[in-house]
Image (cartoon, rainbow over all chains, first blue to last red; front, side, top):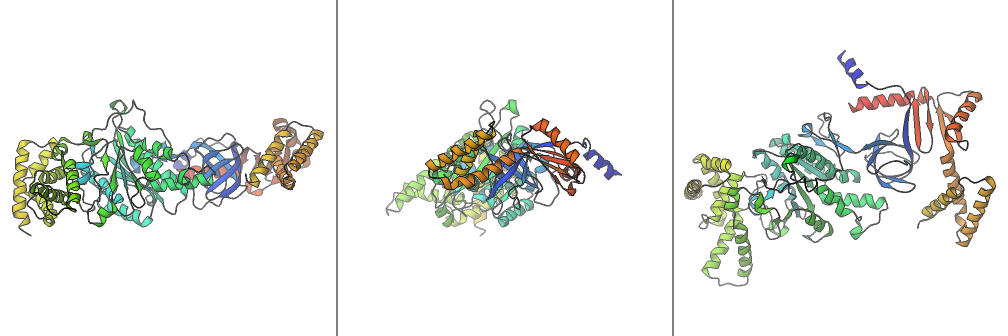
Length: 502
Length: 132
């Protein structure tokens, strides 16, 4: 009886009356793009349906006598003469709390076999970003859990920080660590990972890691795999942004990672070439900049009037042979509020994360750092830059004065201190403690190969003997003189007992 | 410009030139087309242009009426008359039969479709149930 009542409710309002639909006819099908005649009143970015094929299309080209439609399905089976009907609605995506913990495709269809997404809320994929008045400056930090980033290239909530580097330099690892670190953050942001053109095995591995670390419960994954149609790769980042916007507009914080936008650019180039749009530089269409700028402008920190929510974007771009002066990298660099550059030679030398501090920057900077991080890493970037300069100089000169040698040795230890294992993000209080040890020259007398063990010993020591240090930093978000004294003592103990124990 | 595009442009020009013209004027338009093609040394395109023109005109003027069973000529004539009043007398009504519609009818022109068949209604129900 319940089933019958349910069916009755679903079919409420459905009357047996003729339906008038605006239609067109398929003229040509080529490479996932359909040319259709008719559809006189169709709008740009409107959904259309191919009758009898259970296939949807997206209108992208409005020409005088034809409409260019990109297919939103792999197994289309669309042929010449088929009827195409207007749906009179824009492509939208399911959003809401129910999307968290789910794996979806860019059409909002679930891929994780956990059933349909039970939500009544949908947002359009294409949407303008907030206006200038609706925004406010970025002030609160987004901790990635990575020492080098949180101290030297701090990211704020509402910022767009680009991650770029060659293949296999740790870009996805960096993004994954950021998601995992949000588990221990207060005011935890919702995370969205957009896999655009990635291998299925890689995405599967990533989802497993998120699940095992209990990070999937606050993460939504949008997937457009390498073997999906170009339309999916084009739409996936837009879908991720739509999910993030929902939480942003509700006054919450959200983090969206686009991995990676290079594939989206390639897909848009493919679609544009098939639509016969005039190709520009490197065969990209003229609006390739606009594709990324309108996507990334949706990431913002909203003013208190608008709820105070934020959407932080970490777009990823893959460079070729370290060339950051390529067309797409330079476009996205100019759009974003900073970049993190991962260098292949550094990676090969064992410097992981392989962040090139010289080429990386955060335009928000210390405005988005907690007082404790600002205090401990105040001159760190300058010191490291000085060290790199002197290290290069030392390759040409054998005789160095004691002061220079001291700076070089300290710099080497700081560099070793900033190394971090994969999938091991640190809370900001632990980061502050470690950087404090380095900056205050406590590690100057340690052998470089002992620094990794020292870091571990220091944290264990503090957690075991003086956990109030971490508690104080976490609560006050600052380093008081008493806490500094206690920390100095803890560091000395860790050096004395921890290292000698090896 | 590709040959297909050239043919497409000539066909559209011909359709626009023949709009609202009498039979004699239409014949004159075709003669002008032949002259223009000769001038541009593209007479070889004429058969393709005329074939495409015929196809496009039929598409514009055709009204396809799909019924579920064969009705008498009297009823078909009455339907033609009524459709002529709505769409204009220059339209060509093409009745066809498809039992798969189960009941009702479908009316298809170049730019819209009137779905009034039982099959269409059932497809609508399926869509709603599938969605939920």
